Length: 308
Ligand SMILES: Cc1cc2nc3c(=O)[nH]c(=O)nc-3n(C[C@H](O)[C@H](O)[C@H](O)COP(=O)(O)OP(=O)(O)OC[C@H]3O[C@@H](n4cnc5c(N)ncnc54)[C@H](O)[C@@H]3O)c2cc1C
Image 1 (cartoon, protein in one colour):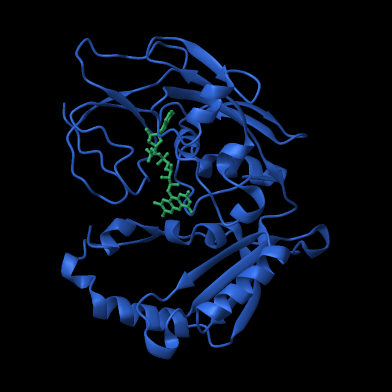
Image 2: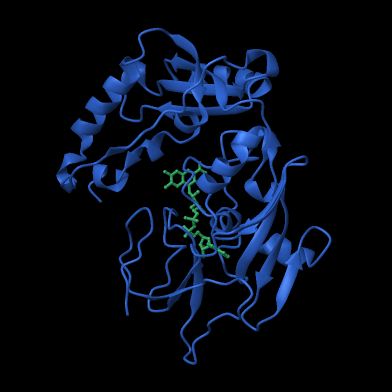
């Protein structure tokens, strides 16, 4: 049956069949026809790398089992369809965090490896692949390769960032990062132009693990390049807050916006409000990991907002 699996960008529209992978130890379900197969995680890729027009998608979300968690060393082994959200739910209460994370936690570990994703600590931690200790690669000829820096190194290197083209990752083992608490000591700084941005950025890279900026691309003239710089560090042992409640965010886009809603004027108006909603030049506060790392995940059905 053709299905309507889409990428995050909702483009291009393609037609493909799906085959769920439920058991990591079973052989790959390869067709007798010349049709191609491609692994699919949670479809959060912007482009078409998670689509296989006219072919077969091997959907991996049923590969969702944890295999081993060394709580002392922070080494986690899980199946490739486990999402980063599920890893956080398991590991954060034990004082472990992802070594690096993209701006959404609704991606699978297989997708994170195949796109070699990066996060706000790219200047310190590099990409996700740097923290992958080993994984199993199931090739289309049925061979299973244990890949690491010392075993099938060429497949290890080619699969990290390999967009699923070297085979199916069935499970992976990653090194987590120790934290004291789920709070982030964060600072939000308005900058007036790109020159100021570069100054703040250079200084922040030294002192902050996480940095990211929003730039108002619709601003012009003297306001050209203005924006808000976000930076933060995990709290230290001494900064652990006495009370903390995990924010619940379930705002849902109630309907599909028509495409014309997203235009030059509406974007400019939104950007103006976003830039000016912060009244002081700089604001410091403790923020939970969820809104700090995943602000867009708080808006369910975000695609609708973009009229996609
Ligand atoms: C709101 C939002 C914010 C984002 N922020 C960032 C960011 O800050 N940094 C960043 O780097 N990316 C970011 N991304 C992109 C996202 O992190 C990546 O596209 C990620 O790879 C998606 O993972 P997925 O599980 O959805 O994989 P899919 O999109 O389903 O697939 C991605 C690729 O992985 C392959 N793949 C999936 N599973 C396997 C497997 N088991 N074995 C082999 N190959 C496999 C697929 O074939 C495909 O080529 C963001 C995306 C969104 C929607």
